[in-house]
Image 1 (cartoon, rainbow, N blue to C red):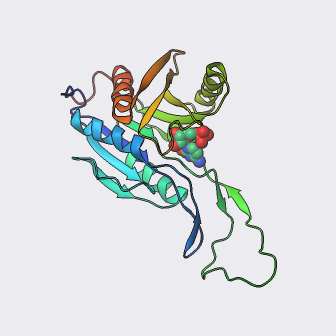
Image 2 (cartoon, protein in one colour):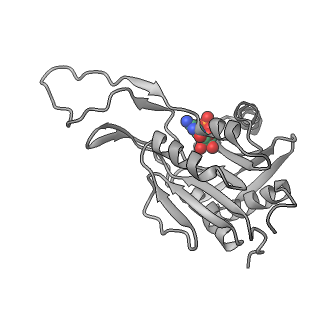
Image 3 (cartoon, rainbow, N blue to C red):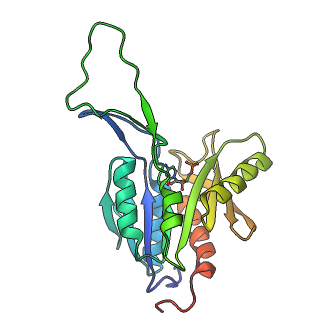
Length: 229
Ligand code: C5P
């Protein structure tokens, strides 16, 4: 059984992929299953936290017991939900796979075949929600990001992760090595936990639930000790 060490804590977790609409029936999306974010929400609820899960597109996953689940589609919907929900939270975890780009134009009607060359899809950059949440956070709130990094060597992956932690400004960054059947659409995960204080903790290969337990274990000592309990 898990310890009830998150009783009295309010946490917000994002999960799954965003869908960036092109027209009423089409979107640009990604392969995120949402499983890691759901595991984080489930474990937090089991440890006693008050959990809000903001879910984009996911595989067919059961709602985590005890969590409040909000559904979003696009990155901009996810952003609005995260800003609204994170205001009073002790911990915010961005496990969602946010699309970096979205189509500039959203057609009101289904884009038709014209018999000619299709028009190119123009893209624009989505806001970086994690960076915005770090900037907007109230004192004492712990903000956690995820990073899927490719690299030939562990050193490359960690180097990219460390740079990303600095750019994003979050307290913890969970770095997953991707490629070779790792991280996306699979049951298992492994990686490192990089902290703003420079510490670097490997997370052994295991289930997404085990990774979630390791992440909450790392968050606990960062929580303001005089809050709520
Ligand atoms: O820059 P990159 O996409 O690798 O960063 C990953 C982290 O940043 C994840 O925690 C993801 O949820 C978050 N992110 C975000 N908004 C974006 C892109 C990524 O919050 N537009």
